[in-house]
Image (tube, rainbow, N blue to C red; front, side, top):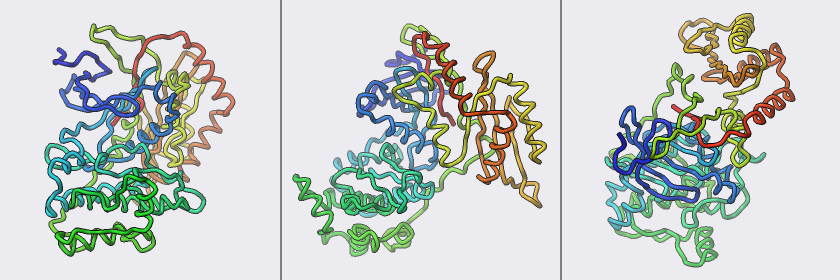
Length: 454
C-alpha cells in the first residue's frame, strides 16, 4: 500500500515528496516497495536536456558516479530511463547541505571543522585515485547525513582522464566563482587534482570563518583577487590552522600543497581516522550493470507499455545513453555487438572460441564467466570477463562482453578474436540496430528500463 505522498511507482520504487529542485528536474524521496529502503531519485526531464544542450553533463555525472564507492561520496544505485525522463536512484542524505549547516551556525569550531575537512579530503583523494576530478567543489555540493558524515554530490562538471589534452592538462573553464582556482581562470590549462585542492581550501576557510577568503560583487575584481591570492586570515584561528590554509590557497599550483602533504600536516592529522572505501566485489561485478525491464505505474495503478532497453537507447535522439556502455571504453571495460545467431548458439560458439584460446569458462545465471588465472597460482586471476546475451527479436541478439578485472591488452585480444570468429562487422551492427528501431517506432507510453544498477 502506498504511503502518504506516494502516488507514482517507477519500477520497484514508490515516489514521494520533493526534496529539492535543480536545473534539469526534481529530486524526490523514494521508497523501495520490496525492502522498504529509502532513497532519493533525481528525475531529469529529457526535454530540458535537449533545450539546454547539456546531455553530456548528465552522461558524465552518471558515468562518474558508477565508478565511485566511498562512504563520503553520494552513492548511485540505479539509473532508469523512459522516453521522457531519466531516473537516477541515489543514496538519500537527510541532513541537508554543508552550506546550510555553516549558515545556521555562522562557523564551526576547529575541532568540528577539521573532522568535516578530513572526510572531504578522504573523498576527494579517493576520487583522484579513480581518475575523477570534481571541478565544482563547494559547500552546496557537500551534503551532511543525520550522523554528521559528509557526502560529496553533483559530479556534473567532473572530468575523467580521457578529457585531458595532449599536454596532460584540463582546459575547460568551469566551477563556481568564489571557489575556482586561479590557474583555471588563467585559461592556460590546469591540473584537475590541484584545482580541486584549491576549492577544498576555500571550503575549509568558509567552514572555520563563515566567510569567503576572496569575495567581491564585481566578478572581474573577484577574479583579480583570486589570481593575486591576496589572503587575509583571522588571527583568532590557531597558527596551525592558518598555516594549512595558506599552504592550500597558494595561487601558484606548482608550490601549492598536494594531497599527500595535506594528510601529513600537523593540524590535519589531529584525531584523524580515515574513512575506508568499499572494496569492489569482483565475484558480483557481473550484476553491476545488469539491464532489466521494469514497469512504471501512475497513481491509478495503470502500467505503461513495455519497451526494450536497447530499443529505447536507439530511439533516443535527445539523450543517447549508449555512451555509458560503449564510449566509456576509454577504460576498456565493455563492448557490445549484435548477432543473428540464437542465444543458445552464441553461448556455444563463444565457449568454444575462448576455450581454444586457453580460457576457463563457468556458466552461471544465464551468463558466461571467462577467466584466466595468473601463472603459478589458482587463486588470482589475470582476467575476468562476463559474457551476456540479450535476445531482442527472433533474428537478432546483442552480446555484451564486460571486463570485471584484469589485463586490458589480454581483454582486447579476447574481444578481437571473438569479433573475428563470429563475423561481426560495424556496418552490419548499424543496419541491424536501425532495423530494430524501425520495428518499434509506433510504441507509445513510458516504461523505464534499468540502464545501470548495483
